[in-house]
Image (tube, rainbow, N blue to C red; front, side, top):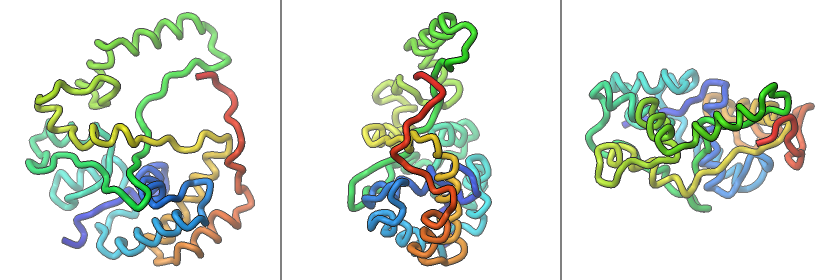
Length: 233
């Protein structure tokens, strides 16, 4: 069924979230773009490219979701809110409502997303901020956020419930969640990867060439060994 698979290929962080699971499961990572695993993953995606939905180059979270809602896309990668969105509109598929990402030669992986709770060093009322975080982390509040916003946080659906079936694919991937690198230069590194990804998917560039031109030769190539700064978690 050519054209029914979609990736979020717009030049923004969603492209990283879609592609990095393939890179990780092939044995590569963001900090080693020219490694055998990274090139293997990009080559696999290059083979898929001719059968991607034609709008993949501009898709983002909501636009690809709306494409699925109207039947133009059958399979795409998205956050838990997406399946809840389809379900509330009566558009969720009735077979394989959500599914885990297929394993690669190096196992399974999926990108960590969602909300992050932190107290900046410059917070004027850090004690009050800490109390608010404690409130947000209570079981009742987490359950409400999951139920009403589709965040599907730390409180899983009750076993056997409708939500448990709906979110089964996400539940299966919870042990394989992986964070993107916590480095000061992440914004530049991500932008370089996005350029390389688009070159492979939409310009039919050879993976090694795309990586070399967009990441390794970039003047702002960063050191992934850097430490984060500016906030305390």
